[in-house]
Amino acid sequence: SAKPSQNFDLIVVGGGPAGATVSAAVALHGHRVLLVEKETFPRYQIGESLLPSTVHGVCRILGVEDALADAGFKPKRGGTFRWGRNRDPWQFSFALSPRLADPTSFAYQVERSRFDAILLDNARRVGVDVREGCRVTGVLADEERVRGVRWTGPNGEIHQAAARYVVDASGNGSRIHTHVGGKRIHSDFFRNIAVFGYFAGGARLPAPNDGNVFCAAFDEGWIWYIPLRDDLTSVGAVVAREHAEAVQGDPATAWRRLIDACPEVRGFLDGVPQATQAPYDKVRVRKDWSYWKSQLWRPGMALVGDAACFVDPVLSSGVHLATYGGLLAARSVNGCLDGGGLDETRLFAEFEARYRHEYGLFHEFLVSFYDMHQDERSYFWKARKVTNVGTTELEAFVELVGGLASGDASLTGAEPAGERLTAVADDFERAVRRLPEADDLRNPLYESESFRQVFQEGTVLQERGLFGGPLETESPLRPGGLVASEDGLAWVEP
Ligand code: FAD
Picture 1 (cartoon, rainbow, N blue to C red):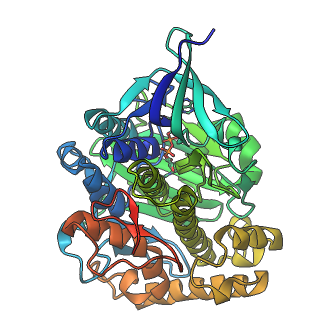
Picture 2 (cartoon, protein in one colour):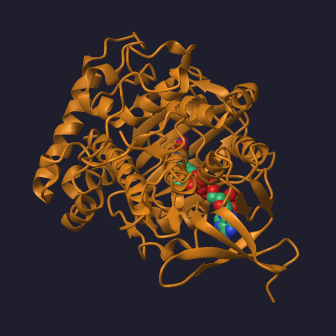
């Protein structure tokens, strides 16, 4: 039988980047937060390449930026790509806008076991009651709202806890996300499979780009090459779902074969042994990662991070969406709990609109990014062209973002959306072609409006971290919308 009920302001399910962010951001406003995490940290997770908005935006707001700087992670100035019609590698750096001073124009390549533990320790430090080795097994709800969770302790003892709000941050394996908005909507376009593992070293790009993520497209898909430490490199191949049987049947062999099929990466790893220390001694497989939900909240409960949605590994948006989504949810929860008089529906509608908008921008951007690759002879690349975004998927997607992504008028029907995506892909391609050779400081971001647009919110977050607020007065996303408070932790009237 259940132990006596405990009471909290917020219960967070899952202690990854999304859960650690939302819990800390609500505890920072003095509210009582319980976080239930089924593993005991440090635990393994994939998703090692970060964006600057996480490091300098969210992490600074949470007060964990110094701990991160002390951890000795590999600084990442940007990305180097062998991608698109251009056969030569090109790169972009994170110097997002000439306005931003250099201190924020880098991110990190992180061992997630260590990164996630730093964020979770920070949550504990600011007052979150963190319970590791405990699993949430169910949601307590009535017709009106969600009111708490049922969870199991390390020795199998059953608890119940009540709260004003429950946030599901339990990742892609979430069992409780169905309590908000039913089933996940899966993307056909990003229906890929990844097989990944680690090498005990490997060549590095010439400085100062030695911390860049390197991505190379080849016939069957693309490969990531992430320098985590001098003696550790993360290498993963993303291929069409049609290869699932072969990949899942013998992941290690498939992984080696795909690395051999990509000349640059094969060259980088010539003579380098596979890593042998746990957790890096295994070759792992992931698939079915691209989905979203028709709803991201209901009274008493919200979804953030992979529990809510994920696009695709290319261009490292996962941890950004997880931590940004966590921050957005925290602003709504704080807005309600602080008692500033704003209506719950309005506060959570703001969370949902902003989260959909950001997801929508990345989704479109990544579709167009795949479209840049024009090799018509390759099954993988042919199948992943804009023209293969199915009408149902486009319609579902238009419904999701409600015309919010990339301007209203253009997103009114399936066809214009398809045309616009192709135009965006052409815009990238031209921007990349304009990059002067051997000048890594020039940046497709300066050359392409679409590139700039997708990193817009990230830039605002970075400015908030760096200057204590955005450089320009923040305007609401939509009429009647709210804006972030001065400390970045709640919503207020503009
Ligand atoms: P998670 O990190 O998955 O955390 C969820 C937590 O919830 C876990 O610790 C889990 O133990 C806990 N949990 C689950 N169920 C329960 C329960 N019932 N009770 C209690 N706790 C529970 N992102 C990037 O930013 N950069 C990359 O380079 C990148 N590469 C990727 C490559 C691949 C192949 C894939 C598939 C994804 C990649 N991602 C990348 C995405 C990234 O992995 C995720 O977006 C990110 O980990 C999401 O964080 P999260 O906090 O939402 O979930």
